[in-house]
Image 1 (cartoon, rainbow, N blue to C red):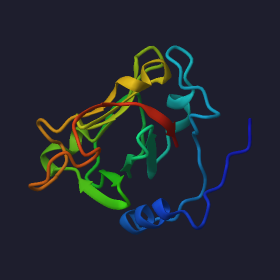
Image 2 (cartoon, rainbow, N blue to C red; image 1 turned 30 degrees about the vertical axis):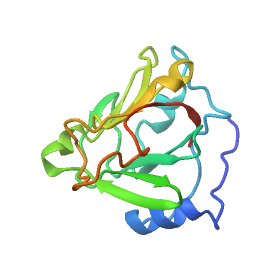
Image 3 (cartoon, helix red, strand yellow; image 1 turned 180 degrees about the vertical axis):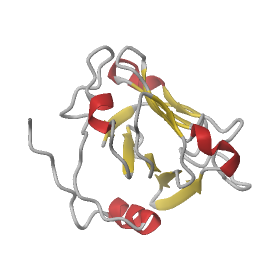
Image 4 (spheres, rainbow, N blue to C red; image 1 turned 120 degrees about the vertical axis):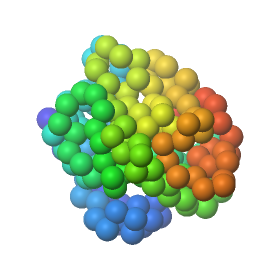
Length: 168
């Protein structure tokens, strides 16, 4: 197996995420520029299964960074509940974190099978598709699973689809 990349210590995004999680980054376990995330052959599920305290960072083609954190171990394909789950966004150098609503904690994160067109979701608010449909990934703010307060269009500055440049 290929050696995994370590995290750059000066990374701005790491500073905020480490502060929010109270954890230090060790390594990148999946990188969409190197690892397979195609429908039917994706290695993503086998890489994240049985792991805990994971951060998913998605870079869009619009230069917006969005993602999420799940503290609980992902024991199986399907939904994983987590009280500590959150999603985040960096638009225009403004970092924001949105915690899971306690009423939605059982639907915090979902990992999909190799055959499914979806790769993973955070609640029903951040939906990430596999490589062939990466431009169909989208953010949804209807029936929010995360606490946005009175803010709207919090992740991308709009709702709707976006295209993925990279997933880590």
